[in-house]
Length: 325
Image (cartoon, rainbow, N blue to C red; front, side, top):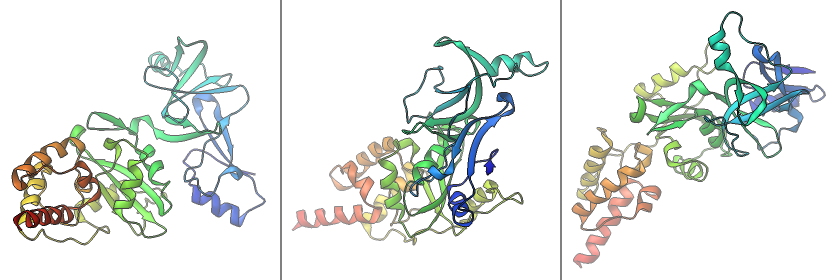
């Protein structure tokens, strides 16, 4: 038997383990010093081929796990929240650190008989009762006034069959931040397909603005993903991207000028989708107004979702030509 703990266990590593050591049990466990080491356990033999994340399992004997929101209310099954632990495993507190102890070990009005440890980790209950770990609460980002958990977006992206690995991060500060996803693939897949898949799983503000396909992920000497190296790739553009084409023709150039102004960017790829460039739903209203002034008609919202700049411009040129005839 082999036990994995302390770091997130990658699903592809579990599958490789199965191939090499099919007879050896591999357990994924979760816990911390404050709860006397480990409080959940997952037998990885239960991991399906379609699962992209390895659950941390179910509570061990004499332990209870609660997933609560910021008001300490239980969240619905499948929804993300903070992981709280109750049971005989809880420590009395931090030695000579009363304030930190009171912040971390709490009582809940909804669970008056329970003393809870506030882990600072995020997770959610899956339909089978296992818990999926969603990263540290400290790593939450704020996008357009909304709190965003990168690992929740990563989990959604990894449900796309062609995606092998994904890491989400943010560039900028507070409401000016944009979400970026770095990813590798096992089969070719377009950004449009990825974006359409994510729109079925995530709210608009959680859809990344920039999709960066890599051949491989840079790693630190310790074997972890080097996020600082990833962020440097943004400025050096050391990643795969779709072919860049300058806007051409009166309609494309006029439309590109509007997009540049609204998006506050210097260059527009005629093959890019508005949302791929960092556009947001509220910006579409401004774009629609400007396009009505340019072309004499207000576009449909679906144009921004399904088409790139060149396709939208061509559509308006065709309409103008038919009217002129």
